[in-house]
Length: 317
Length: 281
Ligand SMILES: Cc1ncc(C[n+]2csc(CCOP(=O)(O)OP(=O)(O)O)c2C)c(N)n1
Image 1 (spheres, rainbow over the protein chains, first blue to last red):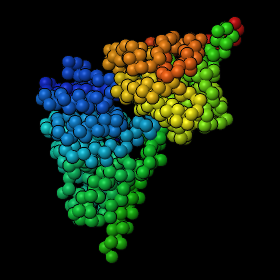
Image 2: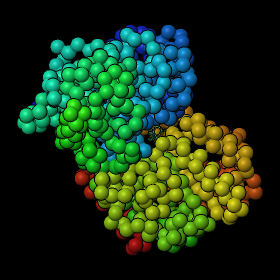
Image 3: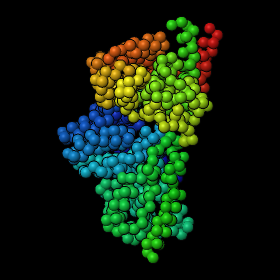
Image 4: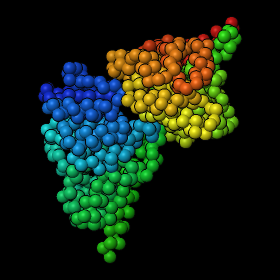
């Protein structure tokens, strides 16, 4: 088994790694040990500012800094970064298309014991609805490092969706080429396609193996850039496999599943089945138990894949 | 206050402190530091000042309490369990998937919780809403709330403070748990909200500065608050983060970390010793 690293850790490490660029300024809201911006702070204390527990202010301050040529990374837990500061992001960052990167850690139900108040599961939907926003949700540490680099190079707002939990490294650092806006085909297959993001990609790979044991060849596509979404790879998968399953650590509405459905409906309608939390809040618990309770498991991906296959057969009759 | 009465409060407060330690230890996570600092205030509220009935937690005319610094749920749960809102045996299930004791206070699942909190500053606004409803309905109940001093950095706190003074909510009595610390360090180093007393005064509040571990001072301040004619009351309580557990006192690192087995044993032994001392005196 490969080693496990939380994407928030990889985020903090990457900020420190690329931090020699003097335009970079990092803001935090009293969570620097958890968001891991403290790694950057240790190296470049003069460009790290703790804004206190004041996320709305932090986002608009970030906007102001960026108008003066700074590349700003503003960090907090996803729930406070995206939803507490929502309107500041909309009006002061996205509308003027400013160069602010939101490092949103502790996204999703994998936050665990802190419970529903802290498990941000609506952020993809909320952020996706804002014009000019780019959304990246990396699957592992390697992809996170590449995403931070891409965010620095892109001139405009970026929402980085990061996790608390240690997750397996699935990419090979030496060979991985990250392209903003492009999905990554991780496994070939022509019976059905599993499209996933974030920590669900590891589960999608496990589901691929389970399906293989039953003679079903599932393609696996990892979508790190949720907006703008890779229409090409999704449409191609719809055409070639005729059935899709979308797996994400998010509520039912507005997330990657919705994004994929929008592409498919527009270009090549095929059955799409969803693996997500449904239309409900999370609760306290150990992440692994919560995944089971909320159906975020390889086994559930497998059963949804079979449903998609059945639906495809009916369509083709 | 006579010594007998003080000892009564102490006994309850130290039992609540034991629940905080047991709860966070069993959960393997949670926030002992700020829970221990507000325990004495909660003890006075639930065992002296508030008009509440554990058998009828939703009584319309009851006093209300909002834990605006919701991460200190272990202190609130410990208090509610001691007061009889739910069985004490539930405490060890804190934060578990099969428990109703959510990591942050949840009014839908926990008997006695008047408002769901966890996102700082929102509870304070909700307490303003409850007090305003009391005025609309011409009811006599009071609304109590506890804020953290780091929490004061949220702009929303000051929006709520402005509204409460504007609507002359003399039925609102709030506390700042002034332990001087937040997650990343001392409040004055991270983002200073000082001077806290002067700010609330400027916002039109009746402000009282007390020792937040002195039961008599807590009771007196609440009584003073209740006598206000047209101002909400802010009790700025000077406290010690981690109060009652020697190795947690004044330590930033114990904000959001659970004790391990050895630390739990040490803490429980200290608290038991303190309680035993009260018995023999
Ligand atoms: C809006 C919001 N931002 C951030 C957090 C994360 N957080 C939880 S506790 C805490 C520090 C609170 O410090 P303080 O209010 O002083 O509480 P105390 O020291 O009494 O525990 C932070 C930043 C939160 N719960 N809500």
